[in-house]
Image (tube, rainbow, N blue to C red; front, side, top):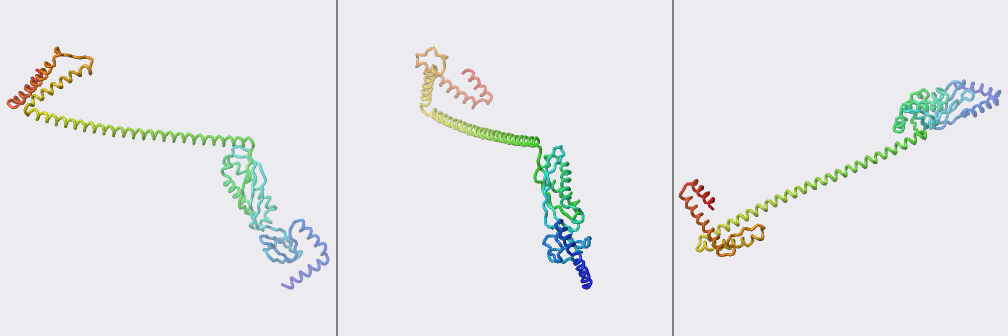
Length: 353
């Protein structure tokens, strides 16, 4: 093996001695125009880069980062692929939404080379191909959405574009990591209409909030008045109950006092000279009542002998004596006759009186 390599190296050396300066200058011009490194036999590949090597015009291998050795004039570095994440600006483009609104949209595309072999031989210009695919996919996805949904569903729109790009770029050895929409430009008239719509929506929300506040205030006031009326009625009811209880107690107390007074009067009448005292009291009450007739009413009924006080007193005492005598007769009759006869006798006395 070593002998074969030495023979090949010797042949190459002889060929280089014959056509060395000419071949070397051609290789230098090719590398300078393509931007690929020159084959200097001993090569150091940087980290996160993949160098695609061709041997005699055919794919040979991919150099790993670090030290690598190539055969001059047979091996040639054809492509250099960066394995880092690549950021590509998607140019601004025109698209029409579902509701026929023309939009100007640009974005940013984040890519990474996953297979250097496919990225080198699967497509001529990977970045250009992915950019064109992103633009066409964006126009297709925007045509499915209305203008309002474009602003609300930017995240889903980005995900749809990434999914569509990955389906096509899998054959190119490239993976789309994410897509972000930078700016969305709408026509001036549409922008003015959107501004008016936003202002109308803000006014609507303000009016709704104000009406809700007014309603809550009215409800609170009505609830307060209701509670106030309930409390007032309960207070009035308690007051009436207390007043009725007080009146009942007062009536009961007056009745008890009157009963006690009647009992004392009856006891006093049964004593010696009780009738005389009762006659005197009746005469005083008669005279007092007669003196108040002119003060309480405009109509006055006067007896024939108004100026004779002694006759008035005699008349009052006569009334008292008649009532006393009738009561004694009632008591005697009730003790000696049947209850029905006693009741009839009492009614007759009332009619006579």
